[in-house]
Image (cartoon, rainbow over all chains, first blue to last red; front, side, top):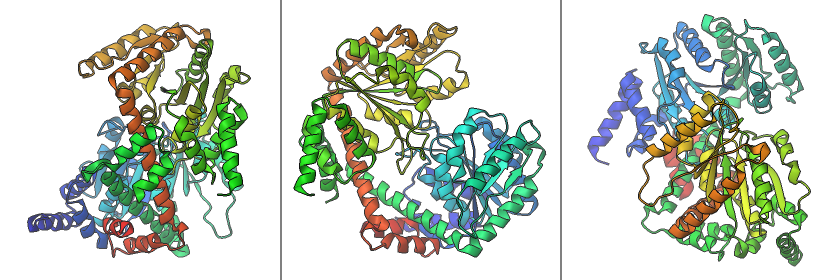
Length: 317
Length: 317
């Protein structure tokens, strides 16, 4: 690394922390592109991270995630907070900028320098949320955003992964979604810190609330553990969002009082470190080193001369 | 490993290869449960694997995947082949036996000893298809099934992952699915070796075929490369399935003639070896060794004393 690049990184981080949107955007792009300076960027950001409240928002298709996120941003902005939003689309391994239609609803905030919004496609080698997501969160956190929202559609395992990344996970439901909600419930029960029944002006909202309440009551929680509240909202009208913000604050306070915040963040850091280590090993194994042991092992497995466990042992040794 | 366990494994493998369904089921369960004897099982199976034609079947929800798979099994059985089916549900990280409703349609084959059917939930740590899927495929292959079908719904990245596992990938479409199909197209275009327009007796089937044909025509294929055919089917009536079987044979022959079969299988073995190596490393890092370096590193990252790249370097060293 040249002294020049080092200066550039320090300058960029300083400008991002001073609130310059373009510098933040550049840093997130460096994460997405796995830029060579990424290690320097992360080293420069490390002392500044850890202050933001990371909020995950998920739910089945059609519940109004983008509209709710947008309304939540409006509410948090009214309280003077700076907000970073990462909209992650795990269903688009090929396209770079996904869900653009949905993102349009977020344009209310496009000219507000206190709001940073970025769509990220999930391009992770192993599916689900990209390994870049935690690093982009880290950029926004260190850049001084008070709340970092990570929004993703609840399909596959992405809702479980988002819960692993967030301090507080907000699960959205809505009436009239039919089987999708039923199917989503099993997974969703385990991950929500706050449940939101959106489209609460429609028929069936009360029933969705009742169903959620009895499922939460069934959950086996130790004494003193967080009991997820249920909030009814009408996102386009901003209705109920003040209550969502209040519950976010209450949950954050609970996380701090009980030490759960530190536990969640250590768990998250463990996974982040592991993911980086694994990505590094894969790059090494896949012949970046010029010496392609993995290919020879794979040929032996295909020929039936070795089983994959024996091959994995050799790869690691 | 005791001599006893060794005998058990050899016996089990021998019985599976002799066509005993219960022995096959037991071996697949050992894969699913990550049984301690799994290494012995894989070592015993290794010399016998590599003969089956591995066919991936995917497509958006509602195209009739289970019905088509069932009809394909009937057609292949009529030709005297032994068929193994793995139905993988990537949307169920929590539940063990998923999609049971769909599986009911496969019960036509429940009493046929030449057909083995198993539903697998995807419980992989990193989302998408479970790392157990390739190993279950290996069991069926080594047990002597002529065709191993892996069926999964095309959501998230599972359709991309199934294409990476299969020799031949069959992508199902159907008329009248609306936006789901549109959304699926980008990913699907890159992975299909054979396209099937199911429900071909319905309005709009011809239009789906035309759309697929123009998309295939747009694809940039080198000289001599496989041009995916489009087959129209009505699965419950068995219509068109003979043509699907013919195209499967044609593709398999093409794979062998061009050396593409070996290339695909080496790629698959590479990923399988890597996944096992990574799972082993994770288990080691996550404190199975009793010495939890990862936790100390995670705490340093949370405290802002280290960045995750530096922590990953330490973990690997």
